[in-house]
Amino acid sequence: MQMLVPGFWRVLIRLSLVGLITNCSIGRSYTQDGQYSESKCQESADCRRLKNEQPDFQLEAQVLEVIDGDTIRVKSYLLPGLFYEVLVRARGIDAPEIRNFKCEREQEFGIKARETISRKFRPGTWVILRDVGEDSFGGRIVAQIDRWTSDRFTSLSEELLRMEEVLAVPYVKGEEYDWCKGS
Image 1 (spheres, rainbow, N blue to C red):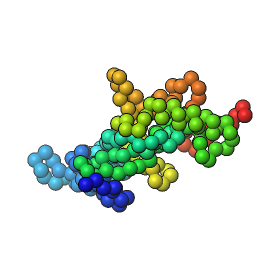
Image 2: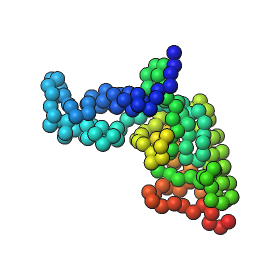
Image 3: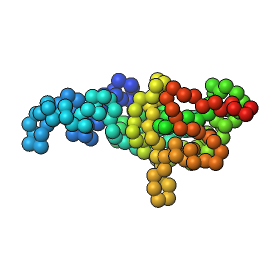
């Protein structure tokens, strides 16, 4: 039986899995011989990351749909039969808007960006989410989204930034690219 995981349990499971992956629990650490060591935990980079809620782990997920040039909806499997669906924003880029656009030119570029990503990240495509964190907007996460090409992993962000036509720009916090220039 598969089930969708509500928010509270999703966070609890995520932190538990991160603790298992890094062999460190929040606020506690154990030496190789199994002895408790508070000081080791305080010095451990893994524990510092956990305390800052910035776990360094990756998730496998399956693409459900492309929302726009920098956001996709995925289904991520935590355990067999246990999954959650989430919106993922591509880390490091800003793509033009399709819904809340400021001018027709921005919407046109947004549609082109979505179509480009839709051809490469089709529904059912398996991706790896790396450097996962919370987005500033509620209801989604931000991560590096990688897919396997013929011989290596390629990130969604890199693919859009390498296009001849500008369909995304590097994201700079506090700055907004003007997609309406020249319209």
